[in-house]
Length: 328
Image 1 (cartoon, one colour):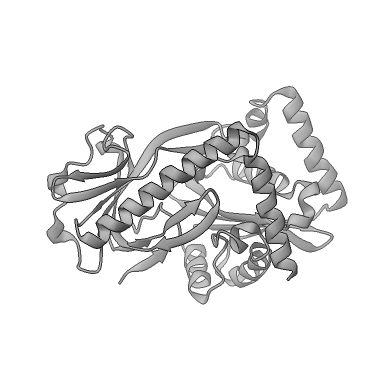
Image 2 (image 1 turned 180 degrees about the vertical axis):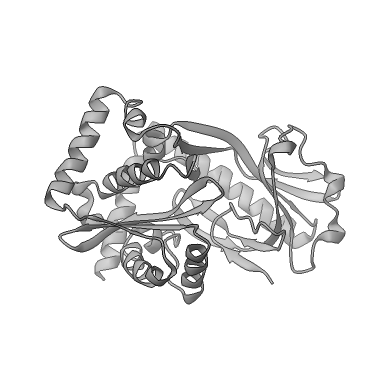
């Protein structure tokens, strides 16, 4: 049975095929998507070598007919060339070099905050204190299977109004299947849903899941009309405070990709690439070529807009557009 996971970083943990959502993007604008299935192959600690993986350990005969090939998680950035290439019997797609930002949760929360500059630390604490003075019971944490329905309902009500959902279609899934997944995670002790309220109204959420001693920041969102209260920053501060106090996890994984909040809160980052091996069919060739050319064009346009100072303005326009769509 093939599962369906949003985003490129998926791992069944059992080698079962999972679908990966490839997005045809122009900047942050979603033009289309392709969802082939792959067998996930994870880079384990004993295998952290630049030449990993050896192609002869990944035969096509082990790939079911309803799967395209293998997803290679977090290979060395030098293992395969960026873009589309032929690697033995496979088509290889290595879309980009990624950074994985994370917070080292060892030690105390106070010592973690001391890693910031005095001015940044003071501004952060002031924002959080101002919010909590007005909303002393602002944070609610959901960890039990029976509470997942309430968290899912409130989180979806927020996510449905964000530009990530309205324009990028990458918000929290509003489906019985995803709620069932949340309950399963909670049953395994691997779920932490965080909800932030202002005057009793849910305004921000974060869905986090654990794997071993690592917690991952999966899906987040906040109501745009409350942006002046910095709800995302306040919520992340409280999440980190909670995780440090638990003394259970060694890291909070922000996932791949760059964002201002990741750079501001992370203590470390890793450089890696997710790569994909696909059967060399004509359909796969055409779609991979289109994916890569779209990626290259989007990157070039983004760099140009950034140089002339328009990238931030376009992102603000997209948020305003999402607000207009929400009003309609």
